[in-house]
Length: 359
Image 1 (tube, rainbow, N blue to C red):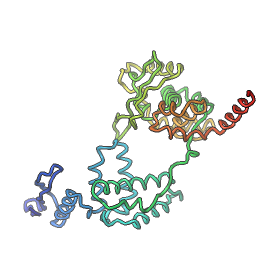
Image 2 (cartoon, rainbow, N blue to C red):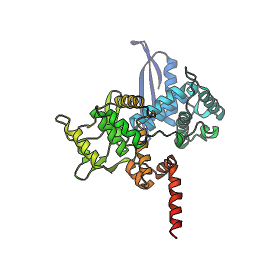
Image 3 (tube, one colour):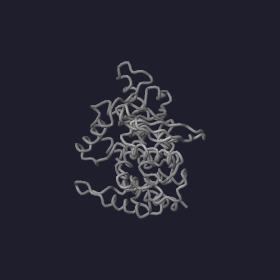
Image 4 (tube, helix red, strand yellow):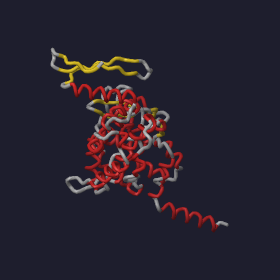
């Protein structure tokens, strides 16, 4: 076995043996190498990969990591991860051997990320820095857990960035949303989409995946069982974000009537056709335009979900009930919104005052 010159094609062929995951010896042939050195380097990396030997470059290990993990993640989640790794991490670590990457290398990379400024002089946000750090750490965790790397150097280097403070969470009050709904009412499809986002607290992908079959109008219910993504110019329907996201939501009567109007307005729509044939970009533009025209605080589409949670807290519903409605994996997430209504503390004090007076 080895590298052989293909005199007819003028390239090199490589023959070598590896053991597959079942322990069976398997012959592999690769063709088309320009030089013998290129062929032998490919063989070296392939054999290291087959043995899980971490004396390979970070770039080569990422390929192995991809093979192990890609099918375990949703396509859009993997694409986000892959883009971060290839653009923000690979340029700094790709040629270093995995087993030789030290804590100091990670700290130097962290410093480069924290010192970054774009053309306008803006740094990465603290939340984005934390995301970058987490993505790199996940690769080394995989090397530790699966391929026996002694330790994760990212964990030893310490944290970078931080979680978004709940004080940074964007939301509209009911009064603000109502103004916007009146403004957008002359665009029926956008109006209906915004209505179900705000009054049911759906994620954008959950709303865009809805079909007429998902609605039980006599019982005023909507079933959330899937999510929509537009990836590489294709419509992709996947399972919702988490297991808790699969749920049934009760709708107010006015929303039931609006969704029925939405369905009836669409010519020959079928039970399993997507109901909201509107793009994310269109909704983004509508939201931005309405905010500017009405002088409302600028929010993102996902902030309508925050607005729904905030509204329910203001109305006095329990964190557990709210978590079930919006599909939060933990009620801890719901609790984080509570401080957005400081007047609640005054309401509690007034209620206790009245209770004391009754004694």
